[in-house]
Length: 220
Image (tube, rainbow, N blue to C red; front, side, top):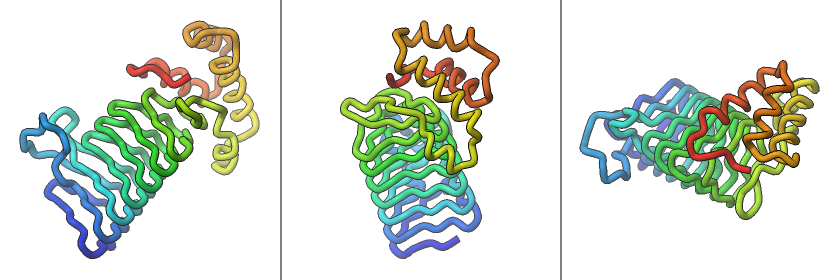
């Protein structure tokens, strides 16, 4: 690993191989949570992740016991990853992104600069959130999010093509997104209709599973 100058790494840090932490970062400090009682918790960082200048990554509380950033992630300058957050692999968090506590982010997701994410939100795999937007509901996998208020605008087709997704997979996702976000049906009706239309690709199955696990409601 490479650790920059004036970096503070606290008790509970568990850092993988080949991680680069730039100067001024604060890693595994105690949570900014009034319920925290000094319990022993962790901040886990996966292999080859890059943590840029003046980021703050807090360790977990007793509720989960740890916060985690996966492998091959890029956490850009001034970003904040709060207590009990879990980020998957190859996630990009751009400059000044602020994650509330208990946020979970799937593999390959990208958050643009200065995005603010409400606590307990879920962000699905391969989602892309445009810079400067505020996330207050769960973001489905494979989606592009933009606008005021933030909303799902399309499938992240360009990003998925770059990652090797086939045309059949992309077309199936496009059909599912049209039904969920562009049809005359409400969300419950659209999901029921989508389930009736099977069999589905693995990607559409994961999209439906995301709706099943959402507790805050999925962004429209």
